[in-house]
Image (cartoon, rainbow, N blue to C red; front, side):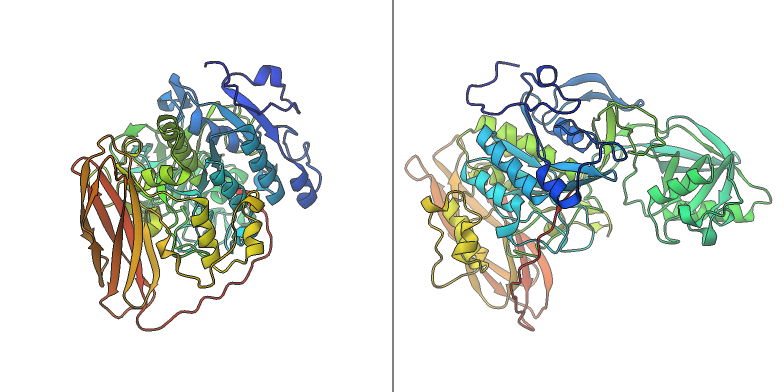
Amino acid sequence: MRPIPSTWKGRCVKGEMFEPAKACNRKLIGARYYLRGFEEEYGPLNTSGNPEYRSARDFLGHGTHTASTAVGSIVKNNASFFGLAQGTARGGAPRARLAVYKVCWGKDYDGKCSEADILAGFDDALHDRVHVISASFGSKPPLLPLFVSEAAIGSFHAMQLGVTVVFSAGNEGPDPSQVTNVAPWGICVAASSVDRMFPTRITLDNKLSFMGESFIITPIKGKLADATTYFVNGVCRPENWIQSKFAVGRVILCFSSIGPYEIDEAEAAAKKANASAVIFVEAMTRQVAVDIIPSVHVNLEQGTKIKHYLAQSPTKPVVQIESSKTVIGKSLAPRVAYFSSRGPSSITPDILKPDISAPGVNILAAWPPQTSPTLTLDDKRSVSWNFQSGTSMSCPHVSGVVALIKSAHPTWSPAAIRSAIITTAYTRDTSFDRIVADGSMKASDPLDFGAGHIDPIKAMDPGLVYDMKTSDYILFLCNIGYTEDQISQIVLCPSGTDTSCPQVLQSNVNLNYPSITFANLQSTVTIKRSVRNVGKNKNVIYFCTISEPDGVEVVIWPRVLIFSWFKVESTYFVTLKPKKESQGRYDFGEIVWSDGLHKVRSPLVVSVNTTCCDSHEYIPSPRKSQNAI
């Protein structure tokens, strides 16, 4: 790396097991940690019974994994998890520098983040002159009002200073309206899969063969046993174990639908019973995970056949489980992860959130060797790479892309960068069919993945961008009912910024957002948008094509946008007219502007409400803490 730029104002702070002279360099140029808010909320940090480092050093692995995904340097050939997914690893922006602000801490092996520490981290990061902030944390609904959410406040300050903030959408899918980090000045990222899988063959009595998925390193051979033999009612939970019965040499068949329960509970239960492995039966829309006891996922169809064979067999069948393989390019991808939180936003339904999706399922990235890959005391393995899934993993993918765009276009605002990412996203998988949403197994829509899956190459040259200024966001805050005092709590240096609201409030559908959302269409409305030409060709003409949402007539005026050296910005209007009787149902379309080289696509999300009128009352929520996601 070249010398650290003179504009950098950050520093590395010494702490437990972290010596700046050794740990920091031209790549890791900043490291700070924030404990005061956590300790006031949860009590003194316990570093004995609850392993943690009182420093910027990472114990839980979450920070290491996300940081390496965003900006990790290139590691050739030898990145793998015990040989699985072996190859060259690199972060999204491998030549970018890294500054770490540790605002989340392990409590009972779970990441907890206090609002006060989050804002302190934002303040220092902005003072230190960072260019991009990757924030893989959030809170479950009900969401805090934006004027008391430190993440919303900190990211607003960042936007004012030209710093892009990328957030996780949350892991509460697939139910609707669970999306978090919905402030329009940030980028909210959903999680999707990649075209890599880990097939694992199961053979019964050398007769029947099934294909599951797992991270099994060593082949396993044992007797197949039903969960009812070892667990009350066949529910594979540790508390249901029949203590007089041990499952030594047994592979236990567990159905997630009997309970229900998650695979980590089944693994803990099987380990408690001294079983050799678990065959876990569930809908194959869930990702595999690193396990504490060998476990194979199979779907309900295969699991039912295995159970029937077991029931009809006069003796316990011999089951053989082969080592998992790494297969790339054979599975359809991307697919929206079942856990990825969906829209619409519970605070601002007229702003589409999430904005974009990015890889977040079974992502291999760096891991602290002192921490076991499963974060359990019984797991004595040490790894430098680990698989993790979550919108925490998809967020840094987008952060890396933002860093690349910022490098190529240093004068672009956070809104312009967000626009470039949103309007160039794609909505088709590797078979050119519509991307599937796991959890429903149906075609996904903008409430699942925003504009679609990120396309880093096209985002570097989007053609047109939808830009916004601080005043636009202040008007947005006025329109959702915040007072001038409340808005002043969000804005950086309010004395120099006009935080007053107009006497007549309007809908936020006219916010110059790249996506167009109307959450309560009762009659004909007209929406305004403005775009700026950022392409190399300054003399260019863009033509419009429309895909109408079901039951909505869409008219665009003008249908042609003409740009020149003297006119780099144009405005157009979208008229939406309901053509059906409906209540609370979302329909989807799109508006695409093209000059023959670029396709600038805006999702069009409309909920027609012509059979009744909804009333929306704003009620502030109590303060609460954030969680790492």
